[in-house]
Length: 118
Image (cartoon, rainbow, N blue to C red):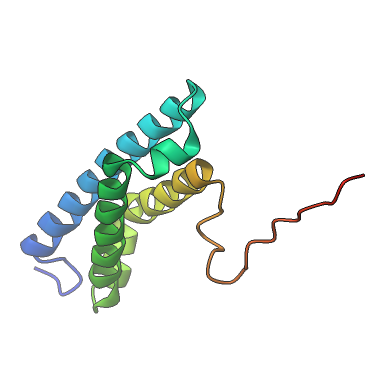
């Protein structure tokens, strides 16, 4: 087999990662639906289900970084574009839920302007 081909264990790991992302996207979309149907944001954000989901999301992000950091990173990106797409989607939905854009979180302090009485 050519050097550029990915090891079976790598492929299995990437596919498991993509499945976990898809599952998390489903869970996050469920949270959005709860908010749409009247659940308070604070109630949701402090729920154990949400905290558990955040933990899984962090693990997924960490795993994705590890998967892509090796020599096979470029091959994986080429072969599994969904890995990156779903990674972005998860953060976008999380941003919709929390009202904070997750992608720019590091670079941009939240600029919530409190306007005084008019």
